[in-house]
Length: 376
Image 1 (cartoon, rainbow, N blue to C red):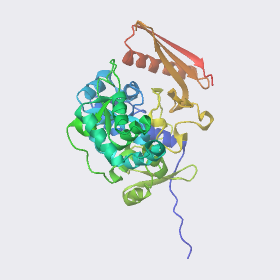
Image 2: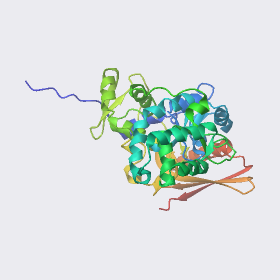
Image 3: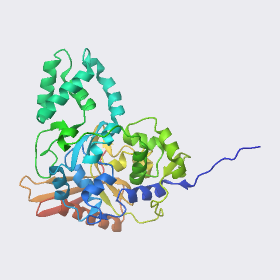
Image 4: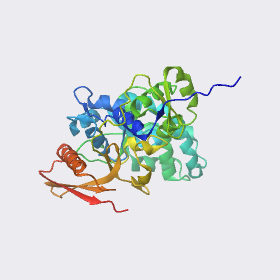
C-alpha cells in the first residue's frame, strides 16, 4: 500500500513578509498605551543593540507615540538592560529575559570559547569564571580594568581572549549610563544577577522560546530559529510542539511552523514604509531572508562588517539611509539612497515616514530629507 505524502499550504515570499511584519509590529504600529515599550521589548525577544541608538529606532518604527524616554527610563530603572545573548551579539532585553534567555543560549557561548582556546592555554575556565564574577560583582568594572585584572591573574594568556572568555562564561550586563538616550558613558559591566538583585533561572527547555520566536518571527523553519538564536539541534523541540502548531511550506518546499491563532495577513495587505536601524533583527533572524530582502538586493544591507540602516518599501528592503546632525544640533538631514526608483506616491509616503522619524528621534529644529541613488 503506497504511503500518503503530506502536503502543507504554501506561503510565498509576500505572504511570509506580511505575516512577519505583522508579528514585528511593522505592518501596523502598536499603540504604546496598549503595548508599552517594556512589553514590546519582551514580545520581540529583545532588540539588537550593538550600538546605543538602534533599540530606540527599532521601537520608534514599531510603537505609535513612542518617545526615547520610554526606553531610557526602563534602562535607568533596571527593568531592561544590555547583554550578549543571541548570535553572540548585544541585545536589549527585559530583566526576566536577561535571566532566562542567556542561560538558554549559554551552550552557544560555550561553543564560541573554542575559537579562543589558543589564547587561553593553561587557563582554568571555572576559575576564570569565578575570578571574573568576583571582580565585576564587587563593583561594575570598565572593560579595560577587567582585562587588566584578568591579565594580572594569567600573565601568560592573551588579555583579549581572557576578556572574551569572561563575556562567554558570565552574563555580563552593560550598566547605565551606557545606553541611556542622550547620555554617554564607557562600557562598564557587572553580572545580570547583581544588576537585577536576583539569581538567574535554571537552563530552560527551548519549547517556550520556540513559541515566543514564532509569535515574533513566524512562520519559520527549524533552521530559521537556529539562525536567530545561534543554537543547534532544535528539531526535537519543534517535534514536541508539532501537535500544537500549524505547518506550512515555503516556495522551495521547506517546512515552516507557526502558532495556530496568530495573524497571517493577506499578501496584498498594504505595508507602509519603515526606517530600520543597522542590525535590526527583522533582517537577521531567518536562514532564508527573502521574505524581507529580494534576491536581487542580497548583500546590499551591509558591506563587510558594516551594516547599513535600511528602508522598507512595500514591506521589502528598498534602500539605505543616514541621519546627520549639525555640530550644534540645530539641523538634521535624512539622506535616503534608493536601490531603484519609487513611484511618486511611494516617495511621498517615505518622506512622511522620514519626517516622523526626524521629529521623534532628533532634537533638531530644522530638517531636510534628500533622495539619492544607491552607490555600491
